Amino acid sequence: MRASSGGTARFGLALALALGASVSAHRRDEYLQAARIAVEPDHVGIVLDLTPGAAVADALLATIDGDRDGSLSTIEQVAYARRVLGEMSLVIDGRPLPLQLASSTFPDLREARRGEAGMRLRLRTGVPDLRPGPHQLTFTNAHLPEHSAYLANALVPESERVAVTAQRRAVDQHELTIEFTLGATPGATAGAASRAPLVATLAFAAALIVPLTRRRRPRESPSR
Image (cartoon, rainbow, N blue to C red; front, top):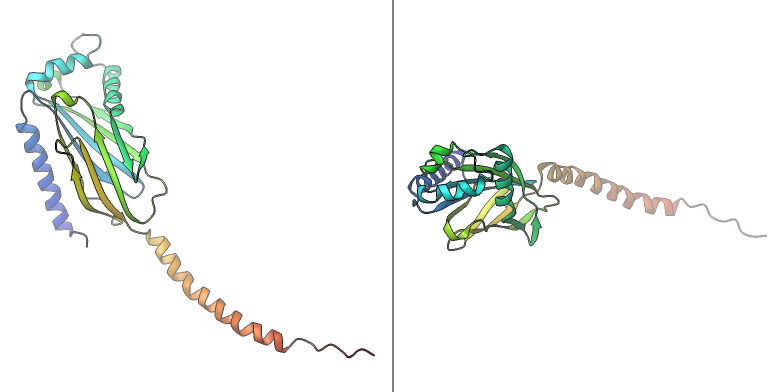
């Protein structure tokens, strides 16, 4: 049974507050990586917030600023986003799916160095041929494990066809497994229901026609 709209709103607000509190209160010497995962019938979307603490921000930003000019060019931002992307994986029902970078935003460097702002990456992958029934998704984040603290949560699906039934996390939350069920498309269900009376009618008609055909078959004239 799905939560009501009010319950969904409360859940979303609680999740946002929890993530916000974790981001604002994370340790100065940690790189907080918070992933929020949205499972939909034909795709999976991931919002990844990357917030370095003040004690590690300079070292991290220096690795992104390849030319050491004190600013992050578009090329440097894309290169780092792709690096992060390459150290993550998404598997559904044992099948690896390629994640793609949908967008990225980088903060003002002064705020980032104070540990007050972070980067946001939006990732996405298509999910073709996912049949109705139970499924399992596993998201793994292996980016900079030495100095990172991880958070991972499933969001409330927008589609009524998807229901998250369970979440299992690694101890440090660098890996999250989501159990979910997918319902049939409304069109397919309605189509099957609308075809059922027609199939039954045709079968009944065929049952009547066959005996009549046998009875009306002309008799062969006797040979002379």
